[in-house]
Image (cartoon, rainbow, N blue to C red; front, side, top):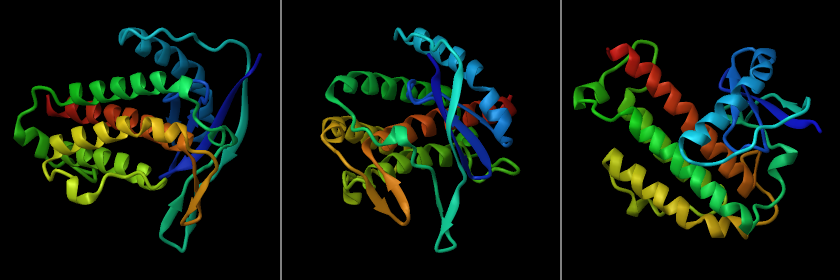
Length: 224
């Protein structure tokens, strides 16, 4: 039986998602290369889950690319990203434990990337990079909050710590608290030309944190 892959253009590169494995993706500036990287990404994903003590079966059979969606701009400033058919089904209660575990795993990996770094390393500017490592961590926290805001479930700004590490913790705690609310959400929300659902929020959150974890690892290698 074939498994589904959905590809989207985002920020000048292509992301090929595997809906049956939340947080599994292959990325490259070239669309075809991103898609061809999916089997390897699945193997890495299964091993990643095993390292965290989570049992996940791989996907057998051929790969079917069901959707390929280019980004487009809304009112010349906001990049609208893909809403796939696989984003539409509601998140059911039976999936919550898996999503909770995956969110804990991605966060543990992110924090491990900065373990032992000195403050000057976290604040170091890198040529060609938008943010230092500390800025990337803040961006991840703010993105978690923004995704939830698409469904009206964001933490009030007044409750946000200013310091980065407490902000990361507080926002993720809030997301985990809101998982039951996400599972009760049906339908789709349209904001600034972009479609959102509970499943898309979780897809984007897992992808985003794993993507920036790899990003920080590459920057950390430069520090050596």
